[in-house]
Image 1 (cartoon, rainbow, N blue to C red):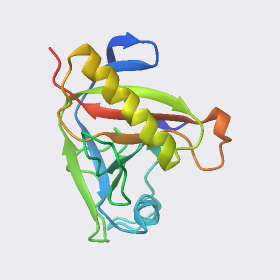
Image 2: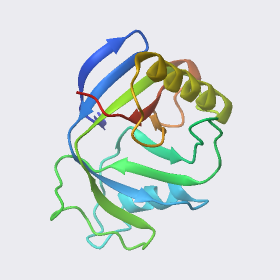
Image 3: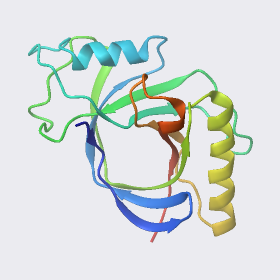
Image 4: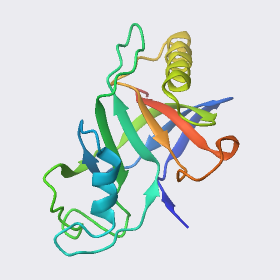
Length: 171
């Protein structure tokens, strides 16, 4: 069983949710053509202690998105949530300088869930939907939207869980 990021739903509205996520450690690779393989090597033992680290979900991909006209580019970062058994002192130290371990503080995130493969066009449409919903609710995004993918690559599209999220200010 894969550990999944915990959250509390503060508000639900059909496919949309507003969630509070506790702080968490993440392993992140910035804008690099082989982001996934660099992170995969890290969790399969390319770290100072040569420890295998359990896979978690979601895989979080940030992308550069113009807020007024959501257009995805190939740049951004990819992050794996570090399993909760680790803290800042015990997480294995990466041997590849492209992997950074950081703590994401507690935050409130608005999300929209969708099935299928996370092709750029479908992610762009879902981002537009989420931002449109937030605007209609009078809620301001606090950062750039990001993609969360919950399934391994071999899961068929109709069974895949994906979400677009964006941090927001929420009372």
